[in-house]
Length: 208
Image (cartoon, helix red, strand yellow):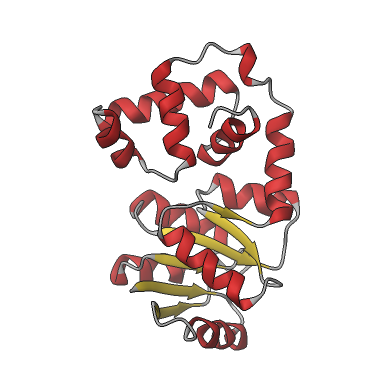
């Protein structure tokens, strides 16, 4: 069972999302929050698998909630579900650590599939957002300008598979701290900001 918290400041939208999620027997809504602070506090208490997070909410927005959840509860996945796909909002969500970003205009089946994918460790981004991220990465130098080690290449492949640091460490027989340091060096070497951009970079340059 995938346990979900819905974070949205509009009560009728939360009710609608709850009804949509009730269509899937493998998804259970365990709580509802009206802003990012409530979403974080509820996550600490309920330990959901996925938080369905709106970005623009009064008081403490989705960026705040996402960052607090990912800093404190890294195993909890945050899937942004919002109306906005402007660069500022997307950048804020991704820099806060969101595991996915989809729009409310998507079909119910797409929302359900996105929740299942994110719960399974796969980053999910709608087409508009993915193109925006890819465009940002395309502005960076390509892989042929860098001397990637075999370990760095393996780490990139596992990041694309949605593996977290603990899983990467286990598969490559490394310490978790070594993986963290390697990812930090990769980000610096490639001039990128986060794991999502690393994954897009690897796909764009046929590393995976």
